[in-house]
Image (cartoon, rainbow, N blue to C red; front, side):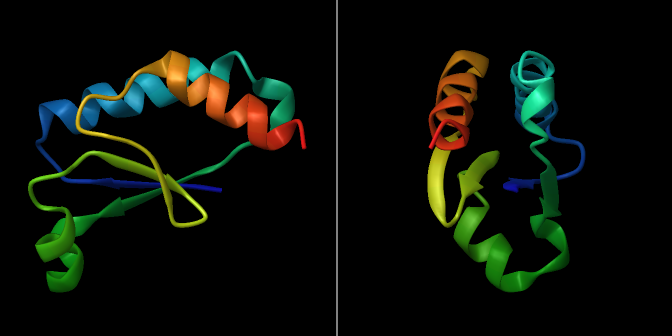
Length: 83
């Protein structure tokens, strides 16, 4: 499960989600799920992530934040699923 911290009406967040979907489309057989977390519904999350979104995490490890790149996402997922 990947945690995706984002906000509504956020261009970078929309683009980041697209990059995640492109990476996952290449890894269909690995059955990876995305948990989208809107930080605007939680004051603590908003304080932590407001200037960082979008943020993609796995097991509390930040994979990428800000501008997401499908190649790095793809490589990360391939590495963790290959274990």
